[in-house]
Image (cartoon, rainbow, N blue to C red; front, side, top):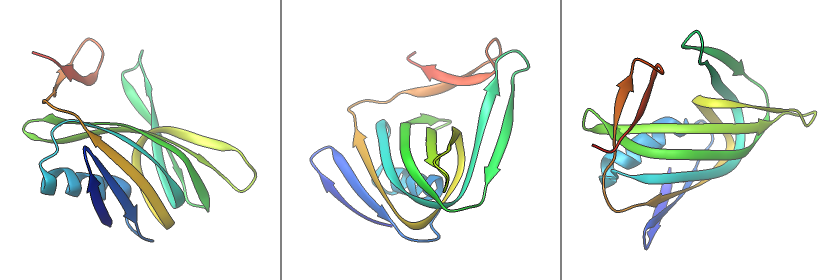
Length: 140
């Protein structure tokens, strides 16, 4: 991963074989990012996403290992237990134009990924909600 900072935004370029969540977590730790929004595009060779069932309170996993275009990466960087907490969603297109997506668990770059991380002043933590079954934003 290579990156530059411009005002409040980091511009990242990921290389083949790099995993997006791993690189974003490393950036957040290295640069001390406590609160940010993330957007990106690129090309992938592996994508693991999941969908949360609000009734069962479980995730259903989907793994794709094929050439894909990362059409949209979006989400946030916050904190939980004083560590970076990434909440990202991804949509990717396959060779036939079908869109695959969900809550991002893993994404391995095939050619490149271009990601913007716009930092925001302040900090927001996360707290588990047993009612919903997810780690929610905690403004307290």
